[in-house]
Length: 240
Image (cartoon, rainbow, N blue to C red):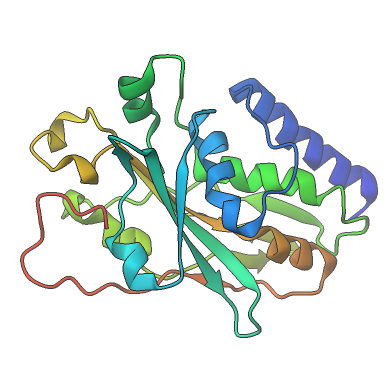
């Protein structure tokens, strides 16, 4: 890709972020702090958070993004590894902006953005490091929202299901994401326990993997997610 083309894409990403929100990503987050940075970008908040990074997938599935009466907001993270031990993707269970504003005040968060906002913020940093990317263009797929029309209360397992996070098409590298929001104040779920509400779940591309892709040191085709078996009758809402 010619350098001026890369510069144009970077400027477009930065301009879009500035128009949408004042909070930007100034430096690359550490792997085990990733979801703390993602919370700031995706839900536009500077509120302090507690982050739990899970080594086991089952523990991550059972975890919830909550507001603890003593610890405050607690969010969850799980890293997806390749066979060589490199992180390929990062999944975050974040708090939704509406729950944060309800609890801490109108100006403390929001509006909720997209999961791709974080991927684009990471991209803007990676472009400073990659001088000659091997791709003609890099695009962030807009269609990221997980919807289950038949069972809207079972969107969590659909979010966790495997999907292709990176793929190539006619010289363009595509970055795909999956996410969903359950607003705390959504009237459809007022009877559901609070731990299932006020959440914003996202899958992201790992920064080092994105950099390796742009340098031609890694191949697209990374799979993020795992099938979850639902045992017994599902609850009114399952946010996993």
